[in-house]
Amino acid sequence: MAALPNWHIDTTDGSVAPDLEKYRGKNLLILFYSMGCPGCLSRAIPFSLQLKRAYPDLQLVAIHTHFERPKHSPAEIRVAADAMNVDYPVFLDKGIETASLYQAEGTPHWVLLDKGGEMYKSIFGSMPNSLQRLDLSLMELFQE
Image (cartoon, rainbow, N blue to C red; front, side, top):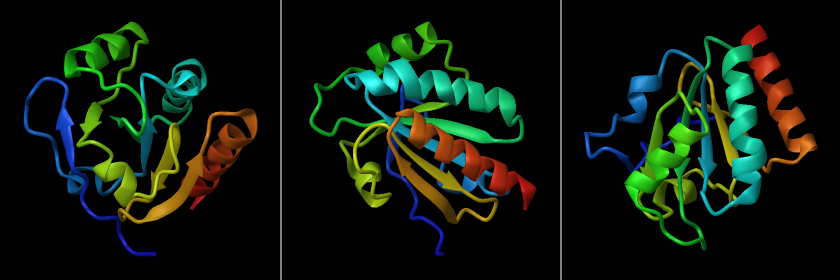
């Protein structure tokens, strides 16, 4: 599989967003989510925090994307992430540009990259079967 193209993101605080290359060398999980998505807020983000504890060597980032949901300001997104105790970077998609590049089907959508920056798995959803597939994929990846 080929490496993914660089993302098109902004930060919530106006600083310069890092290139995807910054995350090469360790496994990376990208969570595409939206504040207007109930499954994102009630299941995906809490599950991501569990994964971060279970896999301490996993790099994790969230990219807030809009799809067909109302737009939220960077400040609103940061405040919501802080209220949910999100302790990993939260970026803003430029519209749905990065979500489209990474073929996200909607929100939440998980994209798991291996240490070389290549896509290992792409999983849509936050229902138990999707979360179980994600956890099993992480187990496989960390055993390699």
